[in-house]
Length: 384
Image 1: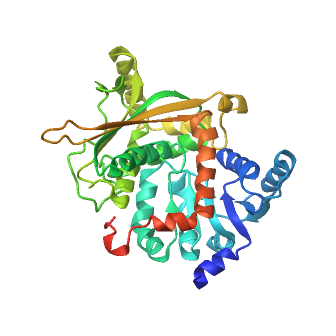
Image 2 (image 1 turned 180 degrees about the vertical axis):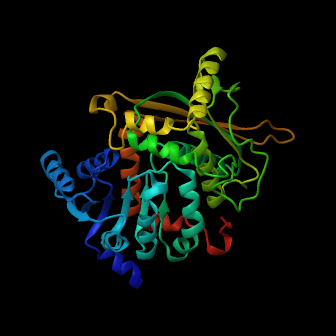
Image 3 (image 1 turned 45 degrees about the vertical axis):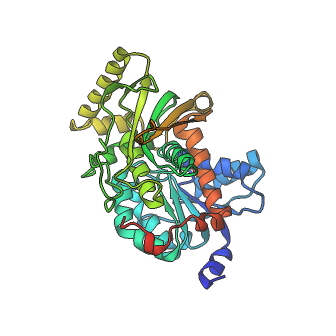
């Protein structure tokens, strides 16, 4: 065991949840307190000690588990460093990430603490790639943004398809994800992140998060409505703007299909062309209003950060997506197809996102050796 790995193994805490007293953060803490193995030591981090103490007491009452408190201020890098270097893995739910996320990542990379977050902001992810990818890769630190509903179902759905074909010696040429059913609320933190996302330059580039990948004829986004040959009518799915970029980056890093070879898209399933048109109109109007001065402030005032769906609303939510993939056709053989179905049984943005963040964190913590075997050799790494 290298000195670095030995030092990490001896740290006082296995998992640090940063932003623990926020809406999503508290759900992550609760999920981990109830489901993480008993020997996993959990710490909760943030600025407000009294709120952290309230959460600590709550976890003792509802899960019978002791969680430890670490305080830090995002405006004081030294205090953030003191938090980060005490854990093996840190999961952050504190956004908007473009505003307050980088000091945490910076500390994680310097102290070789694996990092996971719930961001859905492509400009933030691109900044992390440009500033931290090479050092993190060189030193073996994992930096895994977008580990909630955006973008786990998309990324794992595409992986299921490409892995299925790879086992047969084939490569995926087209993958389309269709959101078949969806019910969930929106928190104030998510709304704030949406408005931050709109500030990014280059967002229309399909390869925005894989800038060094060879480019193909990938259309970039689904048209506002069309009929998919294997699915229902499809209209624009608003999360495609981030999901598709993450899928393209993952594909380029894992090298399942040459980046120029794979076309990826997403859509929202509708029963007919009329419902497609109505949904597309609503999304278009919202997008237009986002650039109207004062509209963002009004929405944030109506739905402030820290707010979110009730427990009943979370438990009444759900989602179902279908992922359809196909290979390129050969001279004497039509394309082969594969379909994967992914379901969630709670509000996708909160109940399911907390589950996805928590399970990603546990995977990184407990299956580190397995993940290390999946890394591509340095000489084969794409310039991403």
